[in-house]
Image (tube, rainbow, N blue to C red; front, side, top):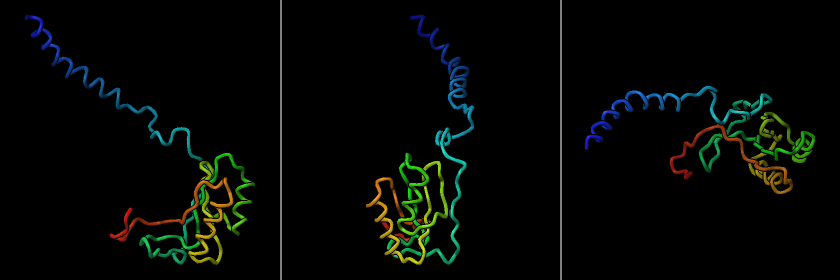
Length: 148
């Protein structure tokens, strides 16, 4: 029975000395970077900032979008020449990019939203190298009835 009180004497020692030591070493971040930044990303990027006249509100969602730009992500194994060939198939022009993740902002000239969506669907349907194609959103939800 004398062993239990001897073990209880160790509890304050554990709380005062060992617990802070474990917390300190477990929370240390020698790299000073988040896990998403390690070994990824690219310095080769330029994002498009639209002029005010190119921004419009999408009626269905209440979101602000760039009326003539689509965002396209390509397969990581595709080359620059192939990217340019695919973009040319919709008469597009690269206005922004992050080449480290094969993300491109493509401007289409003189299009309405129906034609913009048709170009997105053409890219998705005709080119297996296109992983994603979407409207270029530049705002958060404003419509309280929009369901996420």
